[in-house]
Image 1 (spheres, rainbow, N blue to C red):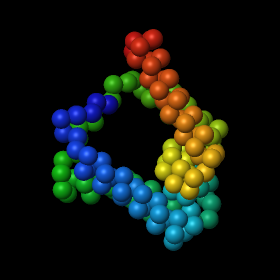
Image 2 (cartoon, one colour):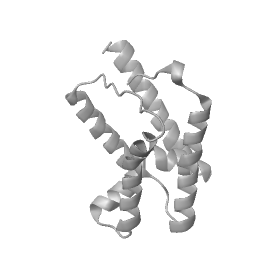
Image 3 (tube, one colour):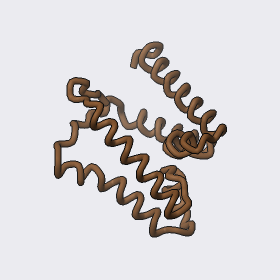
Length: 143
């Protein structure tokens, strides 16, 4: 995926971050739940309690780009990896979220805002693994 840096504006990034923060706070206040996507989706697939709010949350995630298109065009999506790479990456991310007891949204957004030491460590590990993966794939393997 390529970022068009000439079209980047801090205003849209700030607005997006504010919306993510607002959604996280509202979910915590009204449901007492953390907005970790892996936990929300996992609970939905397992048939845990609260299927209604979980389904609404996932539908909201999927509907957001469609709503955005009412105001501005979506950026073009270009994935520079084949299906085997995407499948392997998905499985590794899934394994990592289970190993870390949550995903980047749960730990990075909600956990850090609650000053959770466990979330700080998990987020640092997520980031370090991401940096190392990009370095190995782009520079050592030259893929």
